[in-house]
Image (cartoon, rainbow, N blue to C red; front, top):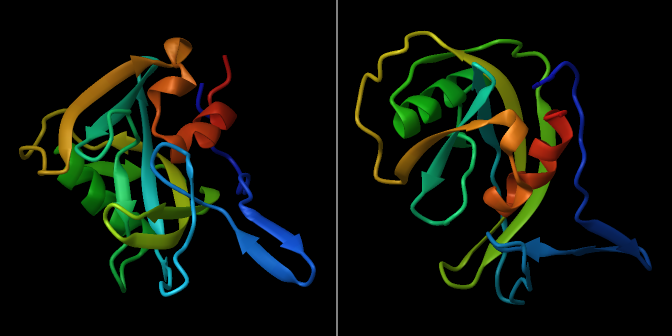
Length: 175
């Protein structure tokens, strides 16, 4: 079952050596990517929702990966975490949600790099347990979502998840 009850930070991608930080950027598959010397990276906070009903967890399949991930995404400047998650969840799934415990997210630090799309950023991801306000979808999926998928929490395999959410999902889902 999902048990999001206290803040936790788990994955570390900073290695401290000789008074400087070396950063390992990873692409969507988990492969190391070097930050080009002429590039800077951006700060990109993001929020994700964990929706479990009848022992099944809701995932989306984004158009940028062949693996499943949790609904959510980047926060807009000036948004609160809960408003951002409500917006992202609606855009990607068509469902209105409510954050169950807004004061206790799980946190995850991730450095993303892609030379294909020339994007590099440090992402802090906040994960919240959510519940649907209504069972009815109120809109079509956005252009970034190709599929909604419900998976039994007892049948989850880490190879089915996008790289940057694997550790989080392994941590919270206890079999």
